[in-house]
Every structure is written in structure tokens, then in C-alpha cells.
Length: 323
Image (cartoon, rainbow, N blue to C red; front, side, top):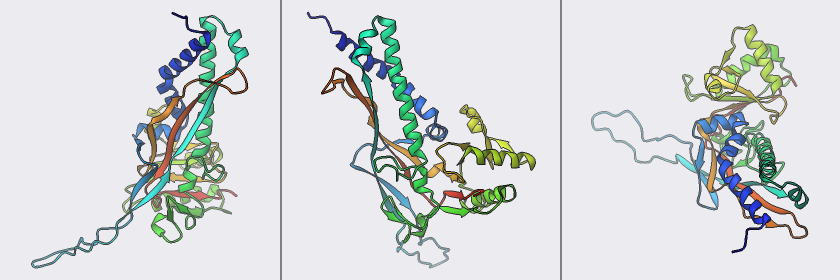
């Protein structure tokens, strides 16, 4: 029986190491992105496997047959249109693990080989995390291949554009809330406008409210200064339980990210967002291959996913803060 070659041994080692740590690497990617960590903790990662696209049922109307009745009253059976469907496209993110021939010849012995393998995998993890985090707060205009970010669903011109196949210009119920603070001093108007936007995104009586606010580090610090001065400062128990430090507004945690546009603060109701994914293509590693023109060995790790929204009307944006 022929002994396995070093190339075969290294292929197996890299593949088995990835399979062994894959769940940890997934968690590391999403744990480092606070809003995804919250979504994962709330069960908002949903298996959407099957189909060439993702269909998302949307409820936009009321049951018009509901009415007060008395003796001999009749109830209508003409309920009208209440539901429609948004259609979203699958997106794929992936990266290559490249093993340089010359590096492998210099990493001999079990400790050196394991160290080499771990470095390759950690590098891929960090790069995947950065790519997903960047896309998460974008509108997809930088790359048509990227997932929709929150900016796609919550925008400064809510009455324009088509999202999920639905034209917001002709469908008012498919528009997020928006207020521009351009020209307003944040030390005077920030908390008042936050309060108004929070209420605009909520049902009557303050139910079905925004669950998380996302902004820049600068604006988050401004809010903390104002809140401390007015004794309005609170902390989020949920975020503390997840190991994320931060303040809260009306119980909704405020997080900052470098991916957020300057002057923006998002009011997000996660009840109507989910990360759709396909378990068959969820950070799985391909077979190892030899590059065509050289001696390097390469494999890819790929994930199939999309950020989905089922209600834009419950989402809000303050823009132009101190601009």
C-alpha cells in the first residue's frame, strides 16, 4: 500500500481542521459584528434553502371584513388585498485558502504544520468578517453581487427605488421613516428627534418598537454626553448578556460601526429582518486543487445568504446629524 503523500496529508489536515473549527469560525465572524450577534441570539438566522430566489410574504393591508355586528347583521366576504410577496436574490460570499508551495516545504514537523494551517484559517475568517460587515451597512451599489445591507431597506429617499421587486414610489406602505437633521444642532435637537423617530416607527401606544439603533461612533458618543447630562442614560441588559458594552435608548441598545454613513442613525425593528441562508452552502470548504500555472494548492470556503426585510414602514433613519 502506497504511503500518503505530504500534499495529501496537508489537504486532509486543512480540510479536517476547517470542519473541526467551522462552527467556531462562523460564530467568530458573527460575534464580531454586534447586530448579527443580536440577530443570531434572537433566532433571526433562518434556513431558506430551496429555490433559485427567496420569496418573502408581506402583509400590507387589513382584513376589511371585520366590523361590529348585531342581530341579523351580515359580514362581508370581500376582504380585499392584504398580502403580496417580495422577491430577493441569493448572494454568495467566499474566499480562497491558498497554500504556497515554498511555504509548505519550510513548515515541516507536526507543530509547524498545525501552526501554518491555523494561520491560513484565521486569515480567511478575518477577511470574511470584514467583507460581510462592510456589506451589512451598504445599499449594494458598490457591488451587485453583495447582500442587501440595512441601507438598502432604510434610506434617506424612502419614496424612490424598487426593493424586492416592489416600487416604493407607488407603494407608500413600502417606505421607511426618515427625518433629516441637516442644519440642526445635535446638542439641542438630537434626543428630541430620536424620541420622535422612535415613536414614528412604533405602533399606537408604543408597541412593536425599534429594537436596536445603529450609528457612528461620533454620534453614539454625542448621545451619551447628552443622555448623561439629562439623566437619560441607560444600559442595555440584552447587550450586556451578549458581552457587548453599550448604552440604550428607551431600552433599545445603541451600537456603532465604522460602516455606518456619517450623520446617520438607524432605528431597526429586527422583528422584520432575518438572515436567510442555505445550510448546504454555509461556510463549506471545496476540494483542494492545484493552481493551473504553478504549484500552489487552493480551496474555497463559500456561504449562500441574503439579508431580508418584511416591513420597511417600521424602520427609521435620522440623517444629516450635525451636517
